[in-house]
Length: 187
Image 1 (cartoon, helix red, strand yellow):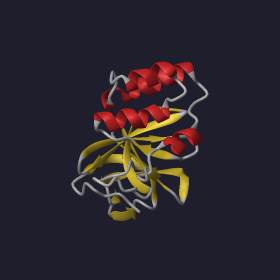
Image 2 (cartoon, helix red, strand yellow):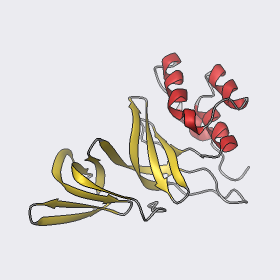
Image 3 (cartoon, one colour):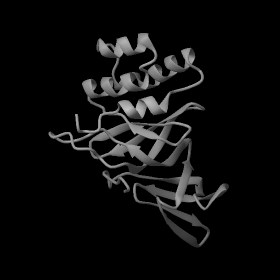
Image 4 (tube, rainbow, N blue to C red):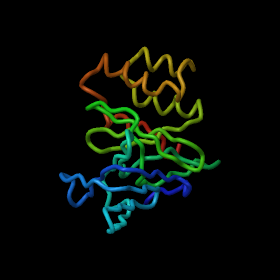
């Protein structure tokens, strides 16, 4: 499933891109990137690629990557599970242990974490739901977990939370524990 909730997202400019089929090669071009496709213009030639074919693109100073199998929090009043989704995210922060992306959704910018094993987690933006989701991410860091539980931290602190966690635990995150703790909607 491909998430294209915000059909208005578009970014254009000179840049380069990588396709899944040839991830080692960067292709320079004039680019138009949307939540649905990448249009690459080189001279008189124009190529269109679906997000399923795209790996990542750089336009100006921004890097956009296709993030597969993103686990979104349950949604709706009934907290129905959301199937894993593929999204186009703008990378805002990167460490070897985790990358932080912003996904432009109809409801605003959604933070997405992608771990080295390619597991990805969309974080809720509502304060209480964010705090619960991040507690699962930093559960083995008592101070951060307590600060989240007491309401001191919210989605605006995402980078600082990840940074503080990695200062104490440079080996990274326990993704098995993180994804086991995420609500499925059945609770």
